[in-house]
Image (cartoon, rainbow, N blue to C red; front, side, top):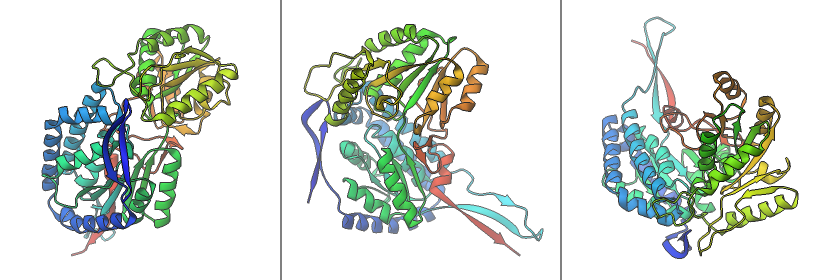
Length: 456
C-alpha cells in the first residue's frame, strides 16, 4: 500500500504521521458503510443529532491544548491562531447542534383550499468533504457539522499535509457518533476523485484547478456540489482613511500565518499618491514577528512546503527585473524550515502574476489609482472575487464601493481575513462554485426539498 508522509513545515525532518493513500476500492467500501449508517442517522430524532454534536464540541474543547500543539506542529500555524481555531471549531459544533432543531420546511396555501401543502428538508445521504490544510479544524467542521446536523453521513478527505489533525478529530468524536457516520479517508488525488464518484453531494475547498475538476466530475454525475477556491483579494485605501489603523490591519491580513489564507490581502490599492502609505505599510509589516510558530508572539510562521516558497521568490525576482521595487522582505529568514520573509512590493506591472494570481504566501503589492472608481476597476480586474477591503471614514464611500466590488464579501475598515461562521461565506467568479457555505445557508446545500401534498 502506498503511504503519504506529513512533515512539519518548520522542521521538515519531523515526520508527523504516515498515512495510507486510500484506494478507490477502499473508498467505495467506506461509502457503503456510510450509506448503511445514514439510514438510522437520518431517521433518528433531530435532538439526538444535536446532542451528538454537543458531545463532539465537549470532546474538542477538552483536547484544546493537545490539538493546538498538533496544529502548530503539522501545518505551522502560529500558536495563538491555532488555539483560536480550536475554539472556533467548538463554537461551530455548538451552533449547528442548535441548527439541527430549526424549522425544516414551509407551509403553502393549497389549490383546493383544503389540503395540506408543505415542504420538508431531507438529507442527501452520504456527503463527501474535501478540505485543505490551512484551517485543518475549522474548515472540516464548518462542512461536517451541518452535514451531520441535518442527517447526512460524511466521508472526509483532508489535505495530505493535515492528515494527523483530521485523524485526531475523528478519534475525538468516535465516542459521540455511531460507526460509519464520520469517516476520514487519507490520500491524494485519486482518493478525492473516488469520493466524488461514490457520494451523494460534495463540498470542496482548495485551489481553482482542483475545484473546477471536482465541480465538473460532480456535475457529470448530477450531484450537488459546492467549491470554495482561491482569492486575489484587494484592499482599497481612500485618502480619508485612518492611515495607521489601515496599515496595521492590512499588514496582518496580508502576512499573518505567512499569507496562507484564501482571504489574505494580496493587493493594496491606494487612491492618490501611494508613497506615504506604502512606507507606513512596510513599517507595519516589518514589526510582525517571524519564526517558530510554537513561540507565543509569532505572527508569520513557515510556508507549508518548499514549492510555494520557491514560487514566491521566483515571482519577486521576475517582478523586480521588470521594474518593481521591494519595500521590505529582501532578507530571507535563516533555518531549515520553509520560511519566507514577508515581502511588500510596489511599481509592479499590471500584467505581472503578482497582481493577478494567488501565491498563497506572505507577498503583497501596492498599486496606485487616481480615483475611487479607478480603484474599483483595478480590484475587479482579476479572475477571483472572494473578498475585498475598503478603508475610509466616509459612510457614503463605503456603501458605494461595497456595491461596485465583484466579490462575495466586503470588509470595511477591517482585515480581509476573518469570517463569521454564522453568516454566508463565498465568492464570485473563479473563487466559488455553487451555493454559499456556513450559517443558515448550509442547510440549503446539505439538504434537498421535498414538496408534500396531503389531501383528506
